[in-house]
Image (spheres, protein in one colour):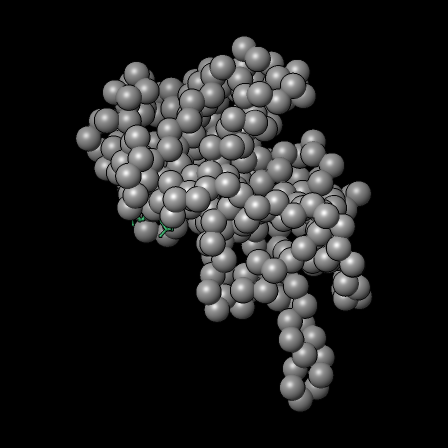
Length: 284
Ligand code: A2P
């Protein structure tokens, strides 16, 4: 993959009315690579959520051949936009033959999707005890909940330092996150809302595993070797100072969980806040 410029569709297209329950209208679609896209939809007026939570979204399935009835085809998607945004943003993989994403990847502005307005999830500030430094560990589309948390003023109020690591196979797969971090640093509204001195606390550590880039390797290996701490000039993770949120593929989540526990961190929950929390990046 050498071409990284995303393709954004914002032109108004004819609206397809599907007469769906909980329908929301697509306002923007951006294709980042042939495997990844993001999109924005209208936000239900009543929807309140905490940064890092997910909702069920989808499309109407094909009609049942016998009854002719259509059922909604829904999947969990982390909300990638901050809670103060008037629209909702999602970041998705395109799974070849995936029942939902094989169709969802073709949505265009003006189309409708189903969105069940019941946000839930573990990647929330309430599930962590107070600390000095927060680490967000993402692989692939696991970046999505952090795209929300990184635009939440609370993230910067609660911690002296905010570190986001993102490991992907190829350079092009980092682009959504890279651009978001760049936008956060430059955005006037965010600088006003979060404070330029608070935004200076943000550190970004992208790595690739299958294509050459300035920093290569799985984040778990870079933690074991101590390279990530040397690169960032920080002490290795400790339960005293560090808190972590993890979102990635299953194997990654399990491996980093073990690693965080080896540092003495314990897993928290909404009802029992501790040192770290984990959520899997949802796949089709
Ligand atoms: P790798 O290329 O070495 O498998 P995927 O696209 O399959 O979800 O993977 C996203 C990123 O997560 C890839 O860079 C992949 O590295 C990395 N990864 C996969 N499994 C693990 C793991 N157990 N620990 C750390 N990183 C992992």
